Image 1 (spheres, rainbow, N blue to C red):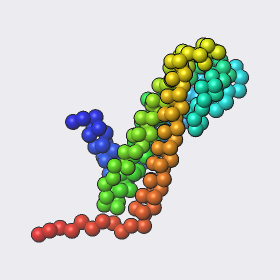
Image 2 (cartoon, rainbow, N blue to C red):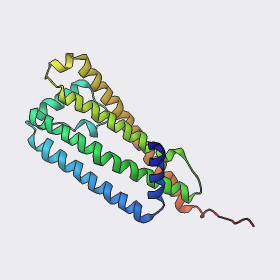
Image 3 (cartoon, rainbow, N blue to C red):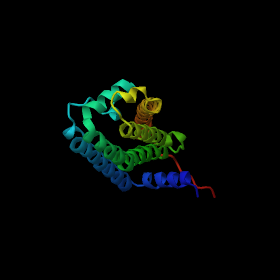
Image 4 (cartoon, helix red, strand yellow):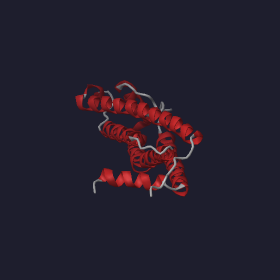
Length: 197
């Protein structure tokens, strides 16, 4: 069984029970608290200046804006930012991807339908991981003004911003699909399962 098959089975398993969906919601809530607490305690509170919004929560950024954010963070907060990104990759991304996918699967199941859109949040998560890896590289390789002349650093910064923009677009599309499908599932009659003799 491939990783994709196992993941699809897990999403289907979670979507089959309200209790499991509530457990995913709780896990997502706790992961959200964890990633925000790490960001606040280890990045924002030790920055040498008020940093602009973290690149993760913006819709795109230029290498100069990323540079300015790293300068405002200072070396300690920049190092801690790596831990923030790891917490994001290991806790938050899996929790929101599984939660939204399970909700989509449950809504489509209530409609008696199957859709590949159930797995759109996985594309969102993939973009989020790529963005975080690019930002981790740029934070590790940051050398103040010299970074803006380093082609590898610039490539990683551009990779991060493109992944960031795809992440936000895919997340918004996932939530719109969830909203539309959820409303349709709420007003739809349950699918009839007729037995054949």
